[in-house]
Image (tube, rainbow over all chains, first blue to last red; front, side, top):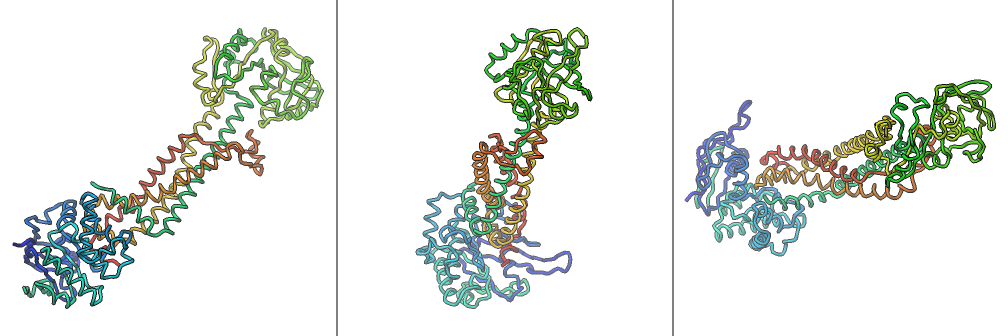
Length: 227
Length: 407
């Protein structure tokens, strides 16, 4: 059963002057529990597609349905709230809040959802344990390695038990060992918790481990390989 | 909406760059301290001027006949002045009372003549209401019991070419409208802070003057001091001695002083507002730097679902913390300074000549009304709120997609 339905998505930047077509009529279904990598050369539209699926950017035309909700029919405030409850984000540069500890970073999303403090702490601890950082809960991002920071970012993305996690080049800033560890951890979360992951990546190591690989070229899906 | 995590995050954010936040907080402390202390100095200066004018010349409340107020003629004296004084002395808020016989006349010497107000006073009572006795430069303040002694201002003495023991002839009208003249001997020369006053007023005993105008014991003016000069207008309204008499407070008698009193409060708020506006620009600058530096982080927060109200609240709280952390400390420091100096005063003898022209001493005692501290707190809150709007607006205008990609 597909949790994400992307229909005829096009995105044209700079429409008034020199239009740049980033996406061109993309149709895509993502099912629950998928571990999907979106690959393609620079400028192929990977990040744009991810941003649109995540509700961070709006398409020039087309629609994105998440569990039957047409995301772009939502008003700005509802859309932000939708992201808070339904989508997890992992960014290339980790983007943790530097003044918060690892645990506080994970708890932050839950606190934004208005969950009770006890529940936030319990869930935060559980997730940090899952990503192998139970001994780093009180560490601030500056005290963690890149790989550890990205693990915290994954834990944060999973905190609210989202429908899916979007990860934009999550291994781009990591060394081989950290990349391998992060992928192992994410695959484990995918298999055990049926968490749906969608990546944009250039990294062949990620592509090799993905269960589905979408190749974008010039804003169109060239291949869709399910492994 | 749970805003506590945002406030907690804001608190941590302001300590992200301790030096920068510290500089802003110190600036707020110094600015607030300087503003409040300056206000206390200005207020103390103004109050000193007003008090000096009241104690030296106007007193707090004066009573005359209505007719005398229209035309100060000798026959318009206050009937049964002694019983009025007795009534006044019964009032709890009346501190001191004196009565005066007051007529207009001419002071002549062998060389010239000047128009003057002849003030017949009861020296002992007058001493408690006005400060004439402190301004004596030569001679004494009616210490001898001889008749027809006169105290003149230094400026008038010079104009009349008079010295101690010289003879001055006063010409004035009596209660029947006849012109009288009497010779007085200069027993004292005074120099008050107001040279115009010195030139146009002479002091004699009330008993001498009232006898000479043909109505011994005649009183034209009753002057009193009350517990707090600020309450004098209220007390004046409360006092009534029939239709023939008019009770006037210092604000009726001296509108310029009343204007000074009412304006000083406004001036203090204007000064404080100017200082706070200057501080506001410092805070806006710091917060704008903060927003620009944290674009990526703010973009991330918006992306993961922190809504605009929360983002706005976060920047607002950070601005608030910067101001609110420093301002009470600044106000407290100012309060300590004012409390320490309100009795000791600040010696401004370097500018003493200028101040003396206005009848003030060389030591200024800073003071401030308690409600001013509270109002300053409200003012700081409002100004901080205004200061936070622009940085918050800049944060809200960030596009998460673009902001996340900025490094």
